[in-house]
Amino acid sequence: MAVDNASQIDAIANDKENACLVLLITDHLNWDNEFEHLKILQDKINAYVAFIESKQYDEIYPNADFKMAMIEIRFKYDITDSCQKFLQVAQDQLGQIGIKIKAQIS
Image (cartoon, rainbow, N blue to C red; front, side, top):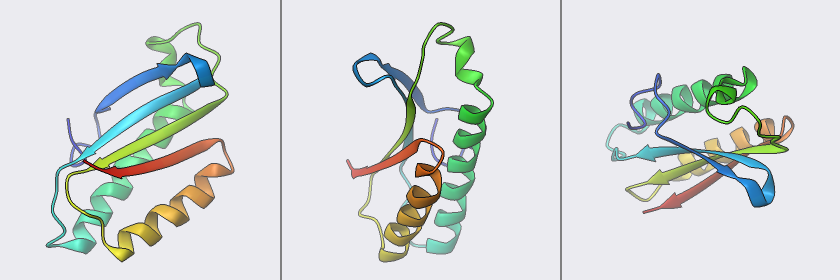
């Protein structure tokens, strides 16, 4: 389970207090190849969005009534300026469909 495996959800949780589906991405990659890293991250986020939009989470939380979803990304290494900009653009677009992106350095 990691950012470079787009076909698998790293972790999933139900934040009942906020009626929020939380999906975790664990990013252990360094930024030596920034372009490739951003592509891998984009692929993983796109896979998560598809998971959310197709309501595949119903298999895990069949009776949940989610009002929003959050993709939480935990980076092992400090992010670059380009990554920060990418995440802001992604947040602006995904926010329109009720998906929030939260990033933090572990």
